[in-house]
Length: 188
Image (tube, rainbow, N blue to C red):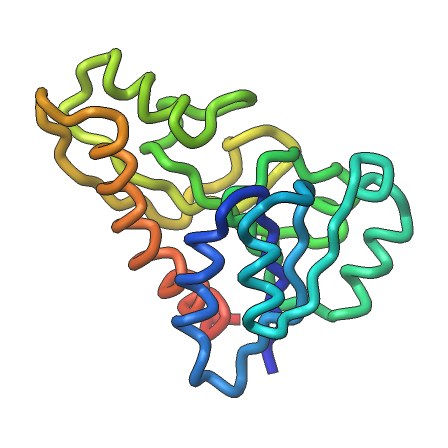
């Protein structure tokens, strides 16, 4: 049995794609959804799917209690799906090569602190990039610098605005993230 803990800060579209992908997969369970924003749409998803959720603040996030809580689920993977806080070093050290993240650009371009969501798409548009994409990578002690697991690309047209770029990236994310998680679980 594989246990996944999903971390999200926003609407939860990637969380929804992951839940849907594993819905009929009895050997994989989404054990917990961790969120740091009380108004985040992902909490509604957790409730409607009857998945336990944990709303955390910065103090709780860095506390030994939080690590113990996560450990109690014996997770196969910690999956960041639009989670905006940097994972504390002690958690990264406890779960080496077991924490993955998705980033809405082709790292190492457009990564690092403060580069998320539409800020990334605006930077891609302002640089007149001809392509963008998404990166799935392991989490280490630095923003967006862990080993790359998978990248997928899409073309960016001159007329594409940031919403259109975001739509293309979401399409890639929703297809590749659940399948990459499945692959990583099968290879463990």
